[in-house]
Image 1 (spheres, rainbow, N blue to C red):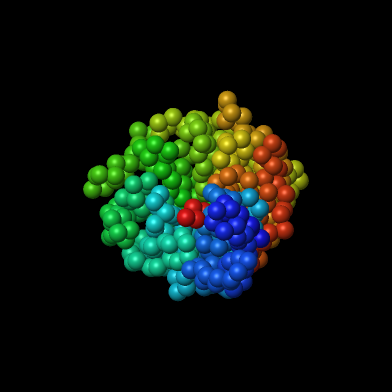
Image 2: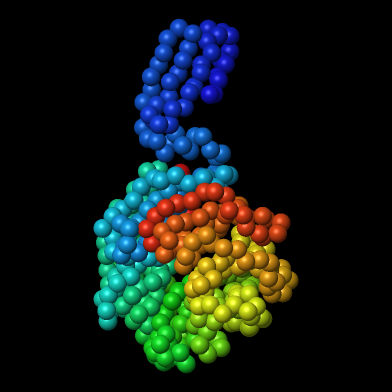
Length: 408
Protein backbone atom coordinates (compact mmCIF):
# COMPACT_ATOMS: atom_id res chain seq x y z
CA UNK A 1 0.00 0.00 0.00
CA UNK A 2 1.34 3.43 -1.00
CA UNK A 3 -0.12 6.58 0.58
CA UNK A 4 -0.01 10.03 -1.04
CA UNK A 5 -0.83 13.11 1.06
CA UNK A 6 -1.30 16.27 -1.09
CA UNK A 7 -1.10 19.82 0.31
CA UNK A 8 -4.04 20.95 2.43
CA UNK A 9 -5.15 23.55 -0.16
CA UNK A 10 -6.04 20.75 -2.60
CA UNK A 11 -8.79 19.58 -0.30
CA UNK A 12 -6.73 17.46 2.03
CA UNK A 13 -7.72 14.16 0.44
CA UNK A 14 -5.53 11.19 1.18
CA UNK A 15 -5.00 8.84 -1.76
CA UNK A 16 -4.40 5.15 -1.13
CA UNK A 17 -2.82 3.19 -3.96
CA UNK A 18 -3.23 -0.56 -3.79
CA UNK A 19 -1.30 -2.63 -6.33
CA UNK A 20 -3.25 -5.67 -7.46
CA UNK A 21 -0.86 -7.53 -9.73
CA UNK A 22 -3.11 -10.48 -10.34
CA UNK A 23 -5.83 -8.33 -11.94
CA UNK A 24 -3.59 -5.70 -13.51
CA UNK A 25 -5.39 -2.73 -11.91
CA UNK A 26 -4.72 0.09 -9.49
CA UNK A 27 -7.52 1.23 -7.23
CA UNK A 28 -7.31 4.83 -6.11
CA UNK A 29 -9.37 5.36 -2.99
CA UNK A 30 -10.31 8.83 -1.71
CA UNK A 31 -12.53 10.00 1.12
CA UNK A 32 -15.32 10.78 -1.34
CA UNK A 33 -15.13 8.44 -4.32
CA UNK A 34 -13.42 5.50 -6.01
CA UNK A 35 -11.54 5.67 -9.27
CA UNK A 36 -10.74 2.55 -11.26
CA UNK A 37 -7.76 2.81 -13.61
CA UNK A 38 -6.89 -0.05 -15.90
CA UNK A 39 -3.18 -0.50 -16.35
CA UNK A 40 -1.80 -1.10 -19.81
CA UNK A 41 0.42 -4.05 -19.00
CA UNK A 42 1.44 -6.33 -16.20
CA UNK A 43 5.20 -5.84 -16.81
CA UNK A 44 4.91 -2.11 -16.10
CA UNK A 45 3.36 -2.94 -12.76
CA UNK A 46 5.98 -5.48 -11.77
CA UNK A 47 8.77 -3.04 -12.58
CA UNK A 48 7.09 -0.39 -10.41
CA UNK A 49 7.45 -2.70 -7.44
CA UNK A 50 11.19 -3.18 -7.82
CA UNK A 51 14.13 -0.87 -7.39
CA UNK A 52 14.94 1.24 -10.45
CA UNK A 53 17.68 -0.24 -12.61
CA UNK A 54 17.51 -3.65 -10.89
CA UNK A 55 15.19 -5.50 -13.26
CA UNK A 56 16.49 -7.25 -16.35
CA UNK A 57 15.05 -9.39 -19.08
CA UNK A 58 16.50 -12.89 -19.08
CA UNK A 59 16.45 -14.72 -22.41
CA UNK A 60 16.83 -18.50 -22.46
CA UNK A 61 17.93 -20.37 -25.57
CA UNK A 62 17.12 -24.08 -25.71
CA UNK A 63 17.25 -27.32 -27.64
CA UNK A 64 13.78 -28.07 -28.97
CA UNK A 65 14.28 -31.82 -29.12
CA UNK A 66 12.63 -32.23 -25.70
CA UNK A 67 10.09 -30.17 -23.74
CA UNK A 68 11.17 -26.79 -25.07
CA UNK A 69 9.28 -24.91 -27.77
CA UNK A 70 11.80 -22.15 -28.58
CA UNK A 71 13.22 -19.05 -26.84
CA UNK A 72 11.86 -17.98 -23.44
CA UNK A 73 11.90 -14.55 -21.79
CA UNK A 74 11.71 -13.85 -18.06
CA UNK A 75 11.98 -10.87 -15.73
CA UNK A 76 14.90 -11.11 -13.31
CA UNK A 77 15.09 -8.99 -10.15
CA UNK A 78 18.78 -8.40 -9.42
CA UNK A 79 17.98 -7.24 -5.89
CA UNK A 80 16.19 -10.44 -4.85
CA UNK A 81 17.11 -13.08 -7.44
CA UNK A 82 13.42 -13.68 -8.20
CA UNK A 83 12.49 -14.78 -11.71
CA UNK A 84 9.06 -14.45 -13.37
CA UNK A 85 7.89 -15.70 -16.75
CA UNK A 86 7.25 -13.04 -19.39
CA UNK A 87 6.99 -14.45 -22.91
CA UNK A 88 8.27 -16.94 -25.48
CA UNK A 89 8.61 -17.45 -29.21
CA UNK A 90 7.89 -20.89 -30.62
CA UNK A 91 8.63 -22.66 -33.87
CA UNK A 92 12.38 -21.92 -33.73
CA UNK A 93 14.45 -25.04 -34.28
CA UNK A 94 17.22 -25.59 -31.69
CA UNK A 95 18.01 -21.94 -30.78
CA UNK A 96 20.80 -23.30 -28.60
CA UNK A 97 22.88 -20.12 -28.44
CA UNK A 98 21.81 -16.45 -28.48
CA UNK A 99 23.37 -13.03 -28.67
CA UNK A 100 21.80 -9.59 -28.21
CA UNK A 101 22.71 -6.43 -30.14
CA UNK A 102 24.30 -3.57 -28.20
CA UNK A 103 21.14 -1.52 -28.81
CA UNK A 104 19.15 -4.44 -27.34
CA UNK A 105 16.64 -4.05 -30.17
CA UNK A 106 17.64 -7.30 -31.87
CA UNK A 107 18.34 -10.90 -30.87
CA UNK A 108 20.22 -13.46 -32.95
CA UNK A 109 20.19 -17.23 -32.53
CA UNK A 110 21.83 -20.24 -34.10
CA UNK A 111 19.64 -23.06 -35.33
CA UNK A 112 21.85 -25.97 -34.33
CA UNK A 113 20.85 -28.44 -37.03
CA UNK A 114 21.95 -29.59 -40.43
CA UNK A 115 24.40 -31.82 -42.23
CA UNK A 116 27.15 -30.61 -44.52
CA UNK A 117 26.54 -26.85 -44.89
CA UNK A 118 22.85 -26.85 -43.98
CA UNK A 119 22.95 -25.02 -40.63
CA UNK A 120 21.24 -21.64 -40.20
CA UNK A 121 20.95 -18.56 -38.00
CA UNK A 122 17.92 -16.38 -37.21
CA UNK A 123 17.31 -12.72 -36.37
CA UNK A 124 14.52 -11.27 -34.21
CA UNK A 125 13.21 -7.92 -33.09
CA UNK A 126 13.02 -7.65 -29.30
CA UNK A 127 10.59 -5.59 -27.24
CA UNK A 128 11.71 -5.47 -23.59
CA UNK A 129 8.45 -4.23 -22.02
CA UNK A 130 6.50 -7.28 -23.12
CA UNK A 131 9.45 -9.57 -23.83
CA UNK A 132 8.12 -10.08 -27.35
CA UNK A 133 10.40 -11.64 -29.96
CA UNK A 134 9.42 -11.51 -33.63
CA UNK A 135 11.29 -13.38 -36.34
CA UNK A 136 12.87 -11.14 -38.99
CA UNK A 137 14.62 -13.67 -41.18
CA UNK A 138 16.79 -16.78 -41.32
CA UNK A 139 19.94 -17.33 -43.42
CA UNK A 140 22.41 -20.19 -43.94
CA UNK A 141 25.38 -20.49 -41.58
CA UNK A 142 27.44 -22.18 -44.32
CA UNK A 143 28.21 -25.05 -41.98
CA UNK A 144 26.59 -27.88 -40.07
CA UNK A 145 25.68 -27.65 -36.41
CA UNK A 146 26.17 -23.92 -35.65
CA UNK A 147 26.59 -23.70 -31.88
CA UNK A 148 27.73 -20.12 -31.13
CA UNK A 149 26.95 -16.63 -32.41
CA UNK A 150 28.22 -13.16 -31.52
CA UNK A 151 27.86 -9.67 -33.03
CA UNK A 152 30.07 -6.59 -33.00
CA UNK A 153 29.04 -3.48 -31.05
CA UNK A 154 28.03 -1.60 -34.21
CA UNK A 155 25.81 -4.53 -35.23
CA UNK A 156 27.50 -4.74 -38.61
CA UNK A 157 28.58 -8.40 -38.59
CA UNK A 158 27.62 -11.63 -36.89
CA UNK A 159 30.14 -14.43 -36.31
CA UNK A 160 28.98 -18.05 -36.27
CA UNK A 161 30.88 -21.11 -35.06
CA UNK A 162 29.79 -24.21 -36.99
CA UNK A 163 30.73 -27.08 -34.67
CA UNK A 164 29.91 -30.05 -36.86
CA UNK A 165 31.08 -28.34 -40.04
CA UNK A 166 34.34 -27.14 -38.48
CA UNK A 167 34.06 -23.64 -39.90
CA UNK A 168 33.64 -20.00 -38.94
CA UNK A 169 31.18 -17.83 -40.90
CA UNK A 170 30.74 -14.06 -41.06
CA UNK A 171 27.21 -12.80 -41.78
CA UNK A 172 26.55 -9.09 -42.40
CA UNK A 173 23.78 -7.41 -40.41
CA UNK A 174 21.52 -4.84 -42.08
CA UNK A 175 20.20 -1.61 -40.55
CA UNK A 176 16.81 -3.19 -39.84
CA UNK A 177 18.48 -5.97 -37.86
CA UNK A 178 18.02 -8.59 -40.54
CA UNK A 179 20.84 -10.90 -41.60
CA UNK A 180 22.37 -10.83 -45.07
CA UNK A 181 23.94 -13.67 -46.98
CA UNK A 182 27.26 -14.93 -45.55
CA UNK A 183 30.20 -12.78 -46.64
CA UNK A 184 33.02 -15.10 -45.52
CA UNK A 185 33.52 -18.66 -44.36
CA UNK A 186 36.81 -19.97 -42.96
CA UNK A 187 37.03 -23.75 -43.17
CA UNK A 188 39.45 -25.24 -40.65
CA UNK A 189 41.52 -28.31 -41.45
CA UNK A 190 43.16 -30.96 -39.31
CA UNK A 191 42.38 -33.29 -36.42
CA UNK A 192 43.51 -34.20 -32.92
CA UNK A 193 44.70 -37.25 -30.98
CA UNK A 194 41.24 -38.23 -29.75
CA UNK A 195 39.90 -40.08 -32.78
CA UNK A 196 36.31 -40.12 -31.49
CA UNK A 197 35.99 -36.42 -30.67
CA UNK A 198 38.75 -34.88 -32.79
CA UNK A 199 38.37 -36.73 -36.10
CA UNK A 200 38.06 -33.33 -37.83
CA UNK A 201 37.75 -29.62 -36.93
CA UNK A 202 35.01 -28.55 -34.52
CA UNK A 203 34.77 -24.77 -34.19
CA UNK A 204 33.13 -23.90 -30.87
CA UNK A 205 33.19 -20.17 -30.18
CA UNK A 206 33.85 -16.79 -31.83
CA UNK A 207 34.61 -13.81 -29.57
CA UNK A 208 35.81 -10.30 -30.41
CA UNK A 209 38.60 -8.74 -28.37
CA UNK A 210 37.47 -5.85 -26.12
CA UNK A 211 38.72 -3.28 -28.67
CA UNK A 212 37.19 -5.33 -31.53
CA UNK A 213 40.44 -5.31 -33.50
CA UNK A 214 40.65 -9.11 -33.34
CA UNK A 215 38.36 -12.10 -33.40
CA UNK A 216 39.37 -15.25 -31.52
CA UNK A 217 37.75 -18.61 -32.18
CA UNK A 218 38.37 -22.05 -30.74
CA UNK A 219 38.62 -25.34 -32.59
CA UNK A 220 38.03 -28.31 -30.29
CA UNK A 221 38.95 -30.74 -33.05
CA UNK A 222 42.44 -29.35 -33.74
CA UNK A 223 43.35 -28.10 -30.23
CA UNK A 224 43.83 -24.55 -31.50
CA UNK A 225 42.74 -21.08 -30.46
CA UNK A 226 42.72 -19.09 -33.71
CA UNK A 227 43.28 -15.32 -33.93
CA UNK A 228 42.12 -13.08 -36.81
CA UNK A 229 42.37 -9.39 -37.58
CA UNK A 230 38.90 -7.82 -37.85
CA UNK A 231 38.11 -5.04 -40.33
CA UNK A 232 34.33 -4.45 -40.40
CA UNK A 233 34.57 -2.41 -43.64
CA UNK A 234 36.36 -5.07 -45.66
CA UNK A 235 34.56 -7.34 -48.11
CA UNK A 236 36.04 -10.25 -46.17
CA UNK A 237 36.33 -8.87 -42.61
CA UNK A 238 38.68 -11.53 -41.18
CA UNK A 239 42.35 -12.14 -42.02
CA UNK A 240 44.95 -14.20 -40.10
CA UNK A 241 46.71 -12.25 -37.33
CA UNK A 242 50.50 -12.03 -37.21
CA UNK A 243 50.35 -14.92 -34.74
CA UNK A 244 47.39 -16.80 -36.25
CA UNK A 245 46.86 -19.32 -33.44
CA UNK A 246 48.05 -20.80 -30.18
CA UNK A 247 47.88 -24.53 -29.46
CA UNK A 248 46.83 -26.29 -26.27
CA UNK A 249 47.85 -29.69 -24.93
CA UNK A 250 46.78 -32.33 -27.44
CA UNK A 251 43.39 -33.86 -26.65
CA UNK A 252 42.27 -31.06 -24.31
CA UNK A 253 39.69 -29.62 -26.74
CA UNK A 254 39.45 -25.80 -26.38
CA UNK A 255 35.84 -24.64 -26.02
CA UNK A 256 34.97 -21.15 -24.68
CA UNK A 257 36.92 -18.02 -23.72
CA UNK A 258 36.38 -15.03 -21.42
CA UNK A 259 38.25 -11.73 -21.23
CA UNK A 260 38.99 -10.00 -17.95
CA UNK A 261 37.25 -6.59 -17.63
CA UNK A 262 40.66 -4.88 -17.74
CA UNK A 263 41.34 -6.40 -21.17
CA UNK A 264 44.80 -7.57 -20.11
CA UNK A 265 43.96 -11.21 -19.38
CA UNK A 266 42.04 -13.91 -21.21
CA UNK A 267 40.88 -17.31 -19.97
CA UNK A 268 40.25 -20.47 -22.02
CA UNK A 269 38.25 -23.47 -20.86
CA UNK A 270 39.13 -26.83 -22.43
CA UNK A 271 36.25 -29.27 -22.62
CA UNK A 272 37.91 -32.65 -22.85
CA UNK A 273 40.76 -31.95 -20.45
CA UNK A 274 38.54 -30.06 -17.96
CA UNK A 275 41.24 -27.40 -17.69
CA UNK A 276 41.23 -23.59 -17.58
CA UNK A 277 44.25 -21.72 -18.94
CA UNK A 278 45.09 -18.09 -18.15
CA UNK A 279 46.78 -15.89 -20.76
CA UNK A 280 48.32 -12.46 -20.84
CA UNK A 281 46.62 -10.63 -23.71
CA UNK A 282 48.24 -7.77 -25.65
CA UNK A 283 46.96 -6.52 -29.00
CA UNK A 284 46.05 -9.90 -30.44
CA UNK A 285 48.96 -11.79 -28.89
CA UNK A 286 48.65 -14.39 -26.15
CA UNK A 287 51.21 -15.51 -23.59
CA UNK A 288 50.29 -18.49 -21.42
CA UNK A 289 50.45 -17.76 -17.70
CA UNK A 290 49.03 -20.83 -16.00
CA UNK A 291 46.73 -23.86 -16.33
CA UNK A 292 44.43 -25.16 -13.60
CA UNK A 293 42.40 -28.36 -13.46
CA UNK A 294 38.69 -28.16 -12.73
CA UNK A 295 38.46 -31.57 -11.08
CA UNK A 296 39.12 -32.69 -7.53
CA UNK A 297 41.98 -35.02 -6.68
CA UNK A 298 40.99 -38.62 -7.30
CA UNK A 299 38.02 -37.79 -9.56
CA UNK A 300 37.61 -40.63 -12.05
CA UNK A 301 34.33 -39.80 -13.76
CA UNK A 302 33.50 -38.46 -17.21
CA UNK A 303 34.70 -34.92 -17.98
CA UNK A 304 32.91 -32.21 -19.95
CA UNK A 305 34.00 -28.66 -19.13
CA UNK A 306 31.60 -26.18 -20.69
CA UNK A 307 31.31 -22.49 -19.85
CA UNK A 308 33.50 -19.74 -18.40
CA UNK A 309 32.87 -16.17 -17.18
CA UNK A 310 34.64 -13.49 -15.14
CA UNK A 311 32.68 -11.57 -12.48
CA UNK A 312 31.92 -7.92 -13.39
CA UNK A 313 34.36 -6.68 -10.72
CA UNK A 314 37.13 -8.88 -12.18
CA UNK A 315 37.84 -10.61 -8.87
CA UNK A 316 36.63 -14.13 -9.65
CA UNK A 317 36.48 -16.62 -12.49
CA UNK A 318 33.67 -19.19 -12.72
CA UNK A 319 33.49 -22.36 -14.82
CA UNK A 320 31.20 -25.35 -15.27
CA UNK A 321 32.09 -29.02 -15.63
CA UNK A 322 29.47 -31.42 -16.97
CA UNK A 323 29.98 -35.17 -17.37
CA UNK A 324 29.76 -36.88 -14.00
CA UNK A 325 30.80 -33.79 -12.01
CA UNK A 326 27.94 -31.32 -12.71
CA UNK A 327 29.73 -28.60 -10.77
CA UNK A 328 30.51 -24.90 -10.75
CA UNK A 329 34.14 -24.08 -9.97
CA UNK A 330 35.26 -20.76 -8.50
CA UNK A 331 38.75 -19.25 -8.83
CA UNK A 332 40.11 -16.02 -7.38
CA UNK A 333 41.96 -13.81 -9.90
CA UNK A 334 45.19 -12.07 -8.96
CA UNK A 335 44.65 -8.49 -10.14
CA UNK A 336 48.34 -7.94 -10.90
CA UNK A 337 49.29 -11.22 -12.57
CA UNK A 338 45.96 -12.59 -13.83
CA UNK A 339 46.74 -15.98 -12.29
CA UNK A 340 44.09 -18.14 -10.64
CA UNK A 341 43.70 -19.60 -7.17
CA UNK A 342 41.07 -22.27 -6.53
CA UNK A 343 38.24 -21.25 -4.16
CA UNK A 344 35.51 -23.92 -4.23
CA UNK A 345 33.38 -26.39 -6.17
CA UNK A 346 29.63 -26.49 -5.78
CA UNK A 347 26.91 -28.66 -7.30
CA UNK A 348 24.77 -27.12 -10.04
CA UNK A 349 21.83 -29.08 -8.55
CA UNK A 350 21.10 -30.59 -11.94
CA UNK A 351 22.72 -32.38 -14.85
CA UNK A 352 24.76 -31.06 -17.78
CA UNK A 353 25.40 -27.39 -16.87
CA UNK A 354 26.02 -26.31 -20.45
CA UNK A 355 25.83 -22.56 -19.85
CA UNK A 356 25.66 -20.01 -17.04
CA UNK A 357 25.59 -16.24 -16.63
CA UNK A 358 26.38 -13.63 -13.98
CA UNK A 359 23.86 -10.81 -13.74
CA UNK A 360 25.12 -7.28 -14.55
CA UNK A 361 25.20 -6.26 -10.88
CA UNK A 362 27.39 -9.24 -9.97
CA UNK A 363 24.97 -10.32 -7.24
CA UNK A 364 23.76 -13.58 -8.77
CA UNK A 365 24.88 -16.48 -10.97
CA UNK A 366 22.30 -18.47 -12.95
CA UNK A 367 23.22 -21.90 -14.32
CA UNK A 368 21.33 -23.79 -17.06
CA UNK A 369 21.20 -27.57 -16.54
CA UNK A 370 20.41 -28.88 -20.01
CA UNK A 371 19.50 -32.47 -19.13
CA UNK A 372 17.32 -31.78 -16.07
CA UNK A 373 15.30 -28.96 -17.65
CA UNK A 374 16.10 -26.34 -15.03
CA UNK A 375 17.92 -23.09 -14.29
CA UNK A 376 19.10 -22.45 -10.70
CA UNK A 377 19.86 -19.04 -9.19
CA UNK A 378 22.86 -18.72 -6.83
CA UNK A 379 23.82 -15.66 -4.81
CA UNK A 380 27.45 -14.54 -5.14
CA UNK A 381 29.38 -13.48 -2.06
CA UNK A 382 31.37 -10.61 -3.53
CA UNK A 383 33.95 -10.81 -0.75
CA UNK A 384 34.76 -14.51 -1.18
CA UNK A 385 33.34 -15.39 -4.60
CA UNK A 386 31.47 -18.33 -3.06
CA UNK A 387 27.99 -19.37 -4.16
CA UNK A 388 24.80 -20.03 -2.19
CA UNK A 389 21.58 -21.39 -3.69
CA UNK A 390 18.70 -18.93 -3.28
CA UNK A 391 15.68 -21.26 -3.65
CA UNK A 392 14.90 -19.50 -6.95
CA UNK A 393 14.56 -21.80 -9.94
CA UNK A 394 13.19 -21.88 -13.50
CA UNK A 395 11.77 -25.02 -15.05
CA UNK A 396 12.30 -24.91 -18.82
CA UNK A 397 13.06 -27.64 -21.34
CA UNK A 398 16.70 -28.23 -22.33
CA UNK A 399 18.12 -24.78 -21.43
CA UNK A 400 21.44 -24.17 -23.16
CA UNK A 401 22.04 -20.39 -23.20
CA UNK A 402 21.28 -17.50 -20.84
CA UNK A 403 21.49 -13.81 -21.82
CA UNK A 404 20.52 -10.60 -19.99
CA UNK A 405 19.00 -7.46 -21.52
CA UNK A 406 17.95 -4.25 -19.79
CA UNK A 407 14.25 -4.05 -19.04
CA UNK A 408 13.13 -0.52 -20.03
